[in-house]
Amino acid sequence: MSTVIEQAVQARLVASAPLLETVPATLHYDRADPFAVRIDFPAPATLEGADVSWAFSRDLLAEGVDEPAGLGDVRVRPYGYDRTVLEFHAPEGIAMVHIRTGELRRFLHRAQTLVPSGSEHLHLDLDRDLTALFGDAR
Image (tube, rainbow, N blue to C red; front, side, top):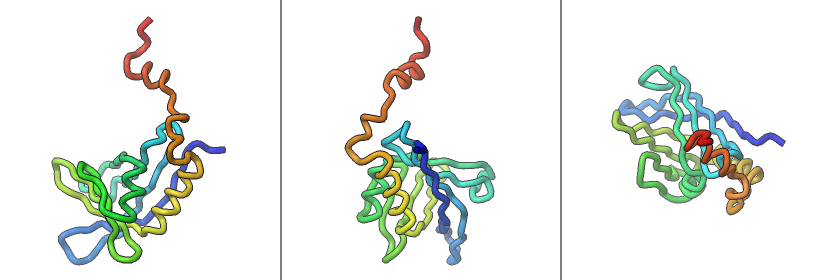
């Protein structure tokens, strides 16, 4: 069984202009980092012209599809009947995208199947993480 889930989604970029631009994005979930999800935007979809990734809590995404969630750099909230808004706050400004809630729920279900909520700690490799943090201190 694969330990990584990837799902392509269409995100609608919210801009000051009334027209919403559709941009490709990819959601990622990796059992090796069981508390986090990641969304990647390709270079053509960003102001900087470089690939951009945002990592945040899987629980934040799960909560945000049903009710407003998040106080920091990433905020998630329902929007209308079938959309969810993801807000990404950075020193350069705020990016907002709309994603179909059904796509997010499908992704979360797949992640839940791979690592059920409450069992994330069973998939942590603390020895590897400590070695990465402190190096090989022999």
